[in-house]
Length: 117
Ligand code: DGP
Image 1 (cartoon, rainbow, N blue to C red):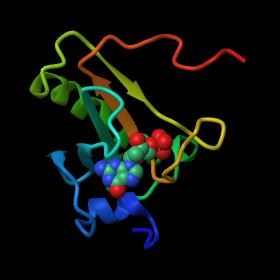
Image 2: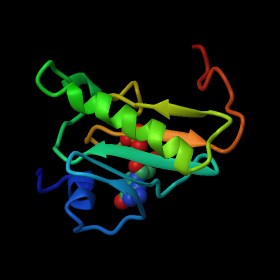
Image 3: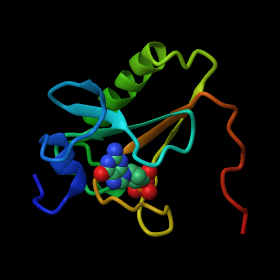
Image 4: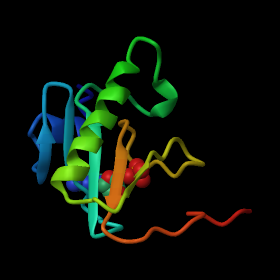
């Protein structure tokens, strides 16, 4: 655990969150600033700073996170589809430096999600 990491504190229960799924490896909770009718964050409990830090040693947890996303899609009734987003680094507009995947649904998304230039 990184003592100054907000998502480590959420994973440890030191900061409250609205949990929607939890196991030994992964926590899913509602985003504080929802960008869609359903907006959940999926995080590994272990501290990994970003998607740029994924290695052969820790990549299995990414597969697990996507298994959880598929399970949650059914529970959250996202039958019509959903979007999973990872913001990485400064250009990716990552604001919390603990790996997380946004799961968004409940409305038709726009594409592309950003201006081209
Ligand atoms: P990103 O920009 O990809 O790093 O997204 C960080 C997300 O985390 C952003 O949508 C807002 C959310 N967030 C930040 N702090 C908290 C918090 O304390 N609780 C919850 N539930 N969400 C948070």
